[in-house]
Image (cartoon, rainbow, N blue to C red; front, side, top):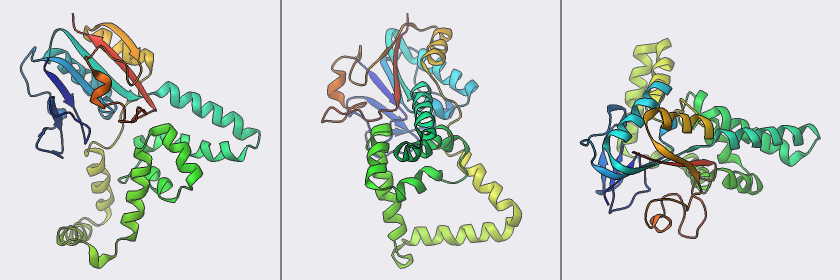
Length: 268
């Protein structure tokens, strides 16, 4: 079988074809998915992407799913993983109800769930309020957030703390040149510099432009032409030997992104 992993980040399999905007490995092809999928029609038996679709606008997301359909062979499988809006919304309502009773633990949880709902949509700087929150989170807070979004929470928290501890003299020449360049931009653009920064961020691929639940994602796949659409678990798939690929799960069996909706469909 020939399998394609789109927007793979650092999670990829060397036997697959892996694409991402940044090539973290020689096994990854560097490509901007906003420009489509650079392969011929009916080239793959499997197309997979995790936490990618939400970074497209509604119209661009429809086109992206059409591209996935195009490059799949008949009877090919599409596996889509996105943040689960339904799960986040239910947790928000639980946190709201518990917070109104005065529960201090859930009042702290409430603050984080609001960030899950809005921060990656509305942020105007890299990392947003999520990164700031994680950098200051207590062990108890970090344990709750890790259950929500996986071990990525711990990685972000460690990175924020390491960056804050980095002395200016330890910064690389490249970083220093970048600081000089930004200072020049600030001097030249003055009041427009903030707009430049926000524009850069919104075109960087970091922002979420859409959120999906079981209904909206199934509807998108159906209108594209997919059939046999079903929700599944992280380790469950029609893809052969899926659990051993460790794309949606860790080697210890835990779920990589617990806040996810996992859905598969088939091209007729």
